[in-house]
Length: 232
Image (tube, rainbow, N blue to C red; front, side, top):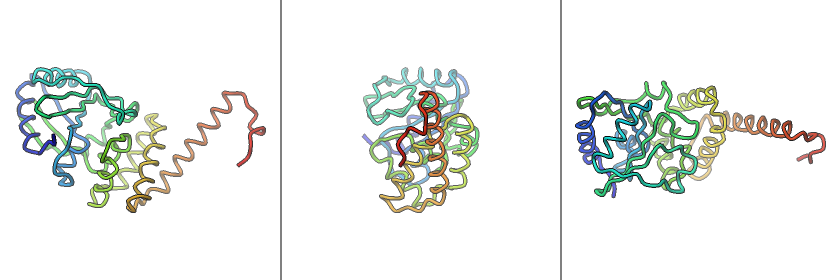
């Protein structure tokens, strides 16, 4: 069942009524795209909270509202999903504590770019920027993610300077391998949807440098003489 903005607002009202302490929620994915006007409805709601106390407060409240944990599917193989919760009325929430992948995190810059969309009592809901939605969608393989990324780009909701800057921030935090994921995603977008990506060459170069460094380290650890390896 698809979730409209009206149904989402009703759910936030329910959740706000359960919050005994101040909690900030950051929405990514299709729900955040609804606030940008680039999607009419979404199959699920992706929420990020910062810290275990906020996570426990939201998780326990959702359980009290009738949500039950369900096992993540194959499309989440790259994701460090804190929990996936579902209710019989069709709501599904993917809830994360800070990390939205094994390494990719909601950083301070992302939080500062998010827009306040809802406030009631102790609960505040922010939606992430189009640039950051694209970044998070680079780590998922769910149906519609490629199309969603293409829509964000086509509607000029992506600032490529921000994307490149956030790539650098994530790498500086030690999230090096992610550069290969976003490079793959952007190349698919460029090749299959024909969208213009001005930072693609830069990101491809960074991905190549990461892979070359990884290969060198692997060879050094194995003790193999690189001169004995076949040349391309």
